[in-house]
Image 1 (spheres, helix red, strand yellow):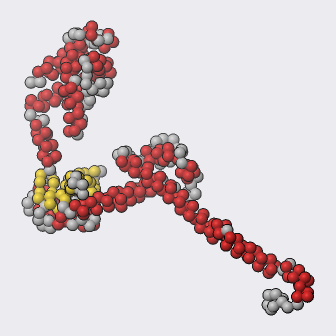
Image 2 (spheres, rainbow, N blue to C red):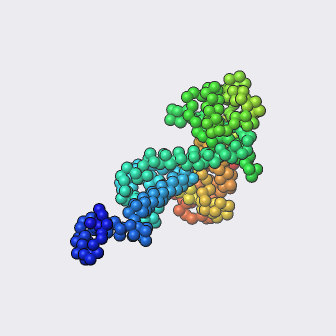
Amino acid sequence: MMVNYPFTKWHHKSDVLGKHALKPSHQTAMQAAAMFLQSIEQPQTATRTMLDKAKADNIERNKHIVKSVAEAVLYCGRQCIGLRGDKEQTHCAGNPGNFLALMKLLANHDDILQQHMEHPTMKNATYVSPQTQNEMIDVLGKRMIQASLVDEIKDARLYTIMVDEVTSHNTEVMPLCVRFVDCELNIREELLQVCTLPRITGRHIATTIKQVLLSLGIALEGCRGQGYDGAANMSSETVGVQALIRQDAPKAVYTHCSGHCLNLVIAHSCGLPIVRNTLDRMKATVMFFTNSPKRERLLREVATQGGHPMGLRQPLIDVCRTRWAARHDAYSHFYTSFIHIVKSLEVIGLGLHLKDYSDDVTTGWDGKYRNEASGLLSGVVKFG
């Protein structure tokens, strides 16, 4: 009754309705009706909505964590510092690396990130593993930085390619750089991609360049210049890279790299006897002062009292063996401090100017260092 057929005995309604209210089917129906009304009046309490909200909150939480990871990776990249350390865990002894150390620092000011670092929801989804770091670097490098750079090159239409092969860990690699004029009329030189070479012949290098440009959607016909060193595999007019590129880009004029030419000129100049002797004496003088705290302290005191323009900075720095730019800085320091160097050598080698400086740097020099200082003094004042 009241389910399979209509209710008509209204004079017995109290007895019938009372018994019906105790039946499980009626109670189930009432619960369903109450839940239906609640879902209409308060939709945020519905089961489906609650499940969707939990899912949405989890997505937002994961987005926040991944964003923090990406910012840490990008920071390390912009500062040109390595990501990895001795131990790829934050709770182990040893150096965890710059990336994990930065993540731990960020977690101190981020409750969501701190909870994830200490108690991740899923052990296989921490987002801080070396694999995730590499994937993040790949995404940031190719899909963001490189993609934006490619769009600018396409807008410029005309460009110059510059490459130079080098061996790294027994693997031949080639940085591919592009020179172009951007929309603001600025001349830009940007690294487009680092390529791996099977061999360093002209044919293999030219093929790699063409494949990279093709994969990025950059038309080779827009190439108007080529900048390489003077090696035969690059400069040959028959089998060199410049000749093979000009088969598809006839207007791509080859130019011997100006930086490489300057480097060759400097290297050859340093081979001249007078230049070589001068540089050797400069190096010996730098080593004489920088290898001894007492001698370096004497030079600092002389430079300070002499009004050294560089203030409290080091009067001398070591001469780099590989980088010409670093060598230039060392030569500039030597030139600026030349008068102070001569006076310091006179203090040690000849015993002059003793009253002008403190006793702890003017006394106590044995015969070996006095003779060495006298020899250096004679050399630097002549440079002949």
